[in-house]
Image 1 (spheres, one colour):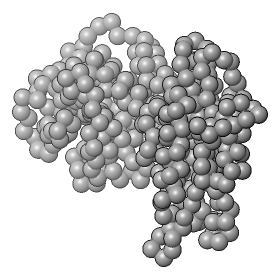
Image 2 (image 1 turned 120 degrees about the vertical axis):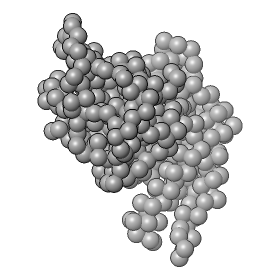
Image 3 (image 1 turned 135 degrees about the vertical axis):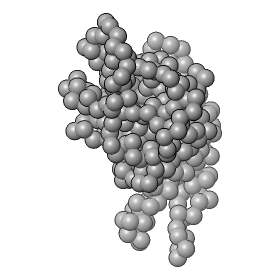
Length: 362
């Protein structure tokens, strides 16, 4: 990390060249401070963006801050977040790299200032040479191998002058952010299923261990739902694996549209099996969600303009709370037993685990 920051930290233009030098700068301290603050959250992109926005605001004293990143194609800049009046927001703003001033700043990979344009709360560099009372400081985000990954923009007063050490802080910070964004993207690829974009089984296993550990420290509840698409093999046999893949994608989207964002973890467990982890959820809440998804699945047409494809799904609900010590494998076994009972009773239903000998339906 440190080598990557040092290699890219030299990307700066003459925007700071005429500024008076300060004193007391310790580059190693800033490398550690900025790098640690960002990288401790690199597994969660949303947290990373919030930390970066606040840190940029702290050290630039800018009025408005924005962070933008390049998409996979490298042709579009998407605003990841903006900061104004001590609040982070997520504007839905994106624009092409080619033919835009922001795209030019990303491509040239040099720090500098430009006239300011505002898109809502998002500060953007504008064309021309006329500066008003404020201007736009542009910090291209240059990561490993000196590859541009995005752009940070800051609204600052037109007469604002950064001394050498303030400039160095922003260089180091922007490079640390770029490397952290790269790491977050890599981590996201590892923990997400490539077909459905749900979380992977391995990530579920990590998270369920964490949630069970929390139950030992705090009072609370934990529920899981295990789904299995009924007779899914018939879809592959009748229509082919490409159609089967599309069914999996559509069912995944159906689930994601009806869970609580940010609290329920939805993972593809394997094949046509899916598992939902619901921290702080009582069994009644899990059952309600499971039955809702089961009903929606039965009503959904998974086909296309040429054919209709109807599917059903069976679910098993398991739960625990702070009063018992349960291992991840035991919790899964409970859900699996309930799912088996749902299949045995005719599919297209949800069964809640009661004990190892008698799963029951509430």
